[in-house]
Image (cartoon, rainbow, N blue to C red; front, top):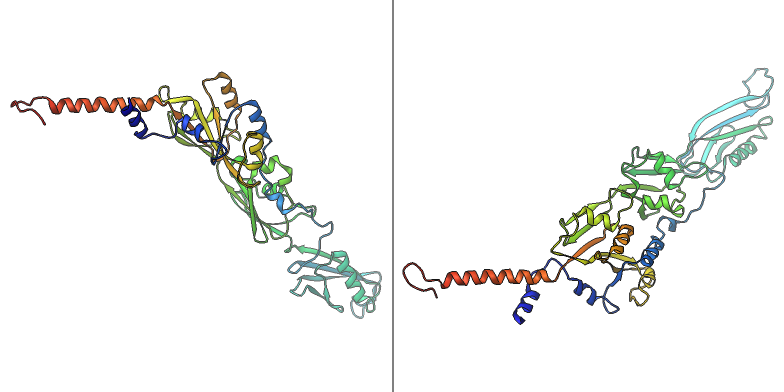
Length: 374
């Protein structure tokens, strides 16, 4: 019996047993084991991803758009008949209109207006620019009036690239453009929201989040700012199923929500003889802030805000745990592991002993010329 026990411990195994997982867990280890229960499912539903895009802030655009360097503007001037902009030598009645060709605001923030010279417009609204032009002309023209329009807005652009139908540079709306607005204007994504990541880069800082979370959390659907780049990336969520299931495989999400019961089913279910139904585990990292709620007696050593490994255990010998598995939501990169029955190891040893006995019997059997083996 001692030899059998020693042989069992030395045999190669597919993974840890239920006893090895549960006995090694605790305050002194790197992980905790939490049995599934309705209370645990309720606490898991309360866990939300930490702020990502929302950490950029969500300031709405200024109520008045300013002219900036690089913008293309149009200027139209009116003056009273016979004034500065009237045809020379012509007797005119009423106001005269003059359209100045479109021009780019130069690197010093100025444009040129006939008879007024260079007028600074960068950092000013169109109304303020109009007032500056009128002030420069009022001593030369008769009752001058001016209208300034932004023809080509080059200072309020953002970029959408990646897995969208029409990637391009776009102008921010006067009332503001949010993340979802930008994705919609780019024609939408080429993959479902739960399989899509959006990455916002602003002033050299990049942060990313799943598009499904932006749809669910209004705080993540922030206003874009000039110069922002929105990168849309197709990145399917996947889990791995290992251990005593009929198939060990990597499973991509084909729906927004995949449950533990669905994951086990997609792997072909448990192996009747090999699987330990009491030991269906899900390996995952959870925020330290949530550990106290999931495991009140735990004293995690990791700082708050970090994540630590957690193992959730389902006992599929109990009927109620099937309902719990049906409501346990899988997450990206989760590992589902089904432990082997410990008696499987003993069976392996017995098979080897039987094979050894057969070999011994063959080697000790007298050969055809009457000489016994060694």
